[in-house]
Structures are given as C-alpha cells and as structure tokens.
Length: 244
Image (cartoon, rainbow, N blue to C red; front, side, top):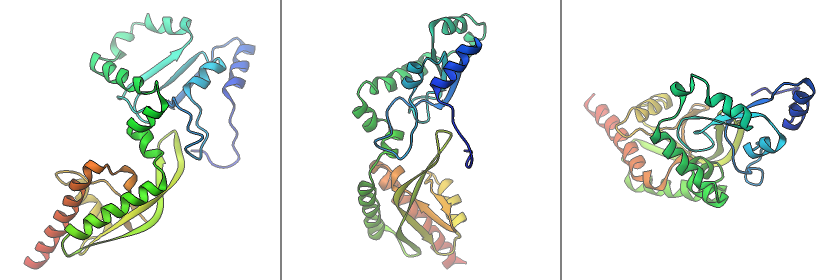
C-alpha cells in the first residue's frame, strides 16, 4: 500500500476521462468484493457492482481471496469487449475447468443473500466477526489449554489486532484478543516453525518477539486439533529435555 500524500481517482472520473479520449477503461480490482463492507469494517472498499454502474468497460478480479471461491480470474464488462475476448485463441488455454466453474457457481449463489454470504463464506465471516465473539472464543481456547496442556507450555491472553493484509485491505487492523503461547526451551520462532510443520499444521504469527494465535481464524471444529498440537509439542520438548 502507498501511504502518504496520495489521491485516488474514482471510477466515474476514469470513465469520463476515457470517454473524452475515446479509449476503453479497464479496472483491475484485485479481490472481487461483491458486498457492502462499509457498515461492518472501517474501510471503504468499492464493489464490482459499483464499477459496473459507473460504466467501466472491463473489470477484472480474483475468484478466491475476498470473494471466497476457487482460485480463478474473472472478467466482467460490456458485451462488445467480452465477445472479443471469447474469440481470442488464448481462451482455450486459459478457461476454467468444469470443477472450478462448479465451485465458483456454488460460491456466487451464496451472494444472492448478503446475510448468507457473511455467514457462509469464511473470509467474510472472519473479517466481520465482532470483538465480543472473538474474546469469548479466546477464553474458551484458554480453558481448553488449562485443562489439557502439560508442563512446559504457558499462555496468556493479550489485546491486539488481526491483520487483514493482502492487496484489498493491506493496512486494515481489526481489534482481537490474541493468545500468546510460550513453550519452555523454545524460542518463539522455533514454536512457530515446529507447529507449522506438525502433522496437523498450526499457523500463528510472530509479533514483538512473541508467538501469537488469533481466534479470528480458529474454527470451533479445529479447536481439538489445535490443543492437541500444542500439547504434543510441549510434551515432546519436555521429554527431550529430561533425556538430554
């Protein structure tokens, strides 16, 4: 992201500029946002529909990432330009296969009702999970750890942020209650590496010299695997220390 003295040209202004020069306007949106996020996130991310209404000739965006579908590239726009692309020889090499199309269709059907999209699409659900729900989840994880983890593993809850990242929301930080995990005898980087390479990988992040887990991206059905992974790592390190 570019931070500082910057300005952004609106889609409508670009369309007017293109019309005055007699050239088509193509907009690469990166992530395909199909829902209004303004009331749920502290950001102003335009939607594909807004660009269409503004008169942009061709709009490209990803099928995965924010949209939540399979990895794919989508192109929408005015019929005359789409028809030209459909006749291009490269189409056969670049077109999606049937399974990808089926997955994309199933994802797009969820967007017929925004409430369903925010509930069923993991990226949207995680981004818009309210802080009280995250805090309750973090405390639930802490209770599980208290009951099941061996000696050598410690943790604490700490206020922090979820980092959205990516091209769409690169600077967006969302308040969260994080779980800082410490394993005796291991540095935070070693904890991160070993958990990432475990049979069931556990993905956290390093921040200010601490290994952190974010409840925003921990699903309820994954909680048992998470606790087991942490317990196994602590037990392995403890056993190695006794034998050494």
